[in-house]
Amino acid sequence: MKRLLLLLLLFVCLIPHCAEATRISAEAAVVMDAQTGRILYEKNGDRRMLIASTTKIMTALVALEHCALQNTVTVSPAHMAEGSSMHLSPGETVTVEALLYGLLLCSGNDAALALAEYSAGSVDRFVDWMNAKARSLGMSGTSFANPNGLDAEGHYSTARDMAVLAACAAENPTLMRICSTVRASVAGRTMENHNRLLKTLPGCIGMKTGYTGAAGRTLVTCVRREGCLLIAVTLRDGDDWADHTALYEECFAGLNDPEEE
Image (tube, rainbow, N blue to C red; front, side, top):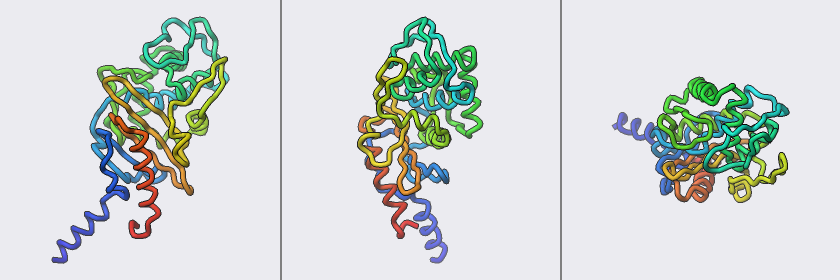
């Protein structure tokens, strides 16, 4: 009997704080305490899936490791890309900082290619850097094939890995300054952040939206409340705004509930 009670106690202790919040639309999801790495909620957290433009968190992180914000980049025809864009024009000269705004606010696929080629000399080499960074973070379920997140063979990640990446990105003050900006006028453009939770969810400070037809809606966000920073990731989620809001409310409530300690 004592053995059975011990096993039951161990099982209860392993249940995430917000385990009740299971009715979400996402195919895969994770909520992580960014400061401790503790997983507070998980649904298919290690399933390898398409991640669309949430890829750009890694693109921004790697670019910031190799470029100064004031450096200038000359846009070429090779930087033109399908899908979301910051509307760069060949021959235009823009700063790395402007490209990062275009990357993280309006999810510019053109900005991703421009940053990659400028940083590494070629997009392929930059992708190698992205994969090396993923390995260094222990993202064992991740493989990058491009810097913008367009569907491609060998381009995937997991909800858990993306939470790890977001926790690392949250330590970069420049990346967080940019991805938390709701609206910016940069390089002759006014850009609106696609992340609507910056306006509606208390404490939300980033991080990146994503969508392709094959990937569905993907979303990585972070919320800081009372000194605690939580990361939420949902993949293939048709109701991601509501799901992130619900997950945060339940997980923060669990952290503050003495009975959950």
